[in-house]
Amino acid sequence: MKRKLTKIQESIFVLCTLQALLDEYIKCLTKEKDNSNSVIYSIITSQIIITSCSYLDEWEELGKLTKVENEPKIITLRKTVKPAIDRINQWSDMRQFRNNIIAHNHRIKNENNSLSILYLSRNLNCPATYFDYKLLLGCIYITKNVLLRFFKDEYNFCLLYTSDAADDSL
Image (cartoon, rainbow, N blue to C red; front, side, top):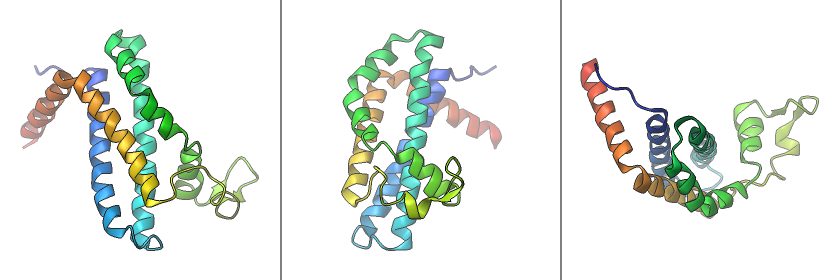
């Protein structure tokens, strides 16, 4: 019977997959950077916000695994990339933008279901320019690369595991 992925391996795999998606999004965004009013630009930047928030959520899940799997490398990893995560977190309203502007029909549920696009969108602290998105994804790229330096063997096992799982499904 094939060994299952550990929670740390699962988290590493999710983080790397999300960062790979972000790499593809920034390639598309680069082609549209001079046309920031286009629908394509808007869709790509929305996907970047959604995926970046998912990355940060998974990053927090990885941090919680220090209690479960007693993995001191996670603590060292998180201390090493803290400046990059702190920079991302300076965009303090990314989740609110994701929730109220992108995902949930432009309404603020806590505020009498008011129309968020009128009241929020101009005042939110989140990436707004092409260069903001480049900085955001650069910070995520750094965290992923440092993660792979700390957990290279675990990531390689994930690749083998998913490759075997794909072969098994054929």
